[in-house]
Image 1 (cartoon, rainbow, N blue to C red):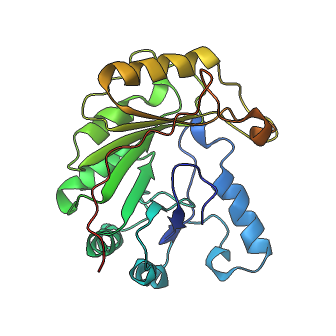
Image 2 (cartoon, helix red, strand yellow):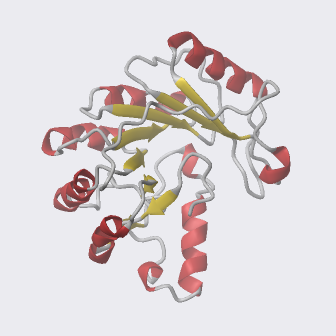
Length: 239
């Protein structure tokens, strides 16, 4: 099971990454990889170097009940060091398991669009991009041009305002603040503005957390309520 509020399970056919923008500054996956390496976990023996894991491709076939699955919580499937052939194999696994929803998230939206013609999408493959501030807002445009049926944004860690989001063809928006020892603050007005933009465009809105040094204490209440909206889920249940 996963502690990430908007998913149920994580699946990591690749591990490792490199920083490309300000949202990567306090990467939790990098910190976690060091811990797992020190624990002697073989998958993380190379720490945070990008690695593909052949054995992980069999895992989704073994899940008996339908799951909401975050793909590569410890990596970025569209990192330049992940070969197209391996990405295609990951996509085949996801297509072979239509009873699950697979949520992919990337900061490398330009490569995502570049490879899009070579990928076969199915209803259960959700594609998202991370956008931490307006300096990387063009990632949304790249996502919008892909053939993914369900498209979403992860505005986390939100470190700046996004007052003019183009939500055309976007199905879901997740917002969250930064956590850790030295988190950059998130202005509540930024969050409220995004929620109102989503409401105006009838886009599902999910508020993940306020973040901060004690994210559990800070909670995830916005406007006196929790926002757990999700896109409509279309699944083919396994028999």
